[in-house]
Length: 176
Image (cartoon, rainbow, N blue to C red; front, side, top):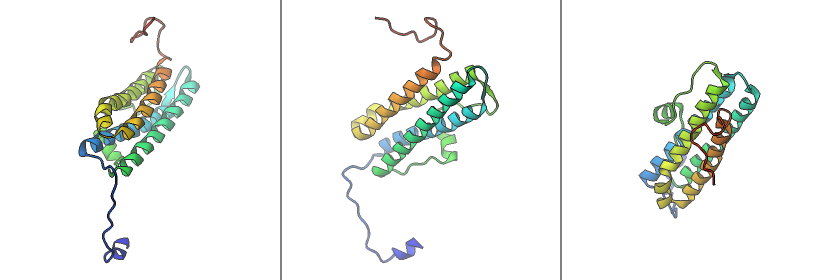
């Protein structure tokens, strides 16, 4: 219906100060896909985690889900602002995600800690991999990546600490 209304209308022309390149679009799309998958994996884990310290991990997974959902929306809206069409459809996420798959069945807390920490670090890895090229073209989008990295790496550290053994786990902290 709206196409019929606009057939005789003059062509609309926007004059944005900045428009993304194909490379920038690809980088932000990958981050969006990984954040979307992190959100889905966080919910899968939230629903199916069992074992020692269940409640604490169950609640921590809510934080992961909330962060991933918020960041995916921020990235997608940034994409639209620089004339990129975000695609977080299920088929796209399944095809392009950088994250390892999460199990469908119940998962004990210790394994969930490792899997979710791995997923958090995988998304952070995507952010770190694309950062410099994004920053060279669009520092505003790079600022978003900084925020994503800060929070996801914090969550990964907090969740991963559940399975760490003091002074024995890798990587070892730097002592000065």
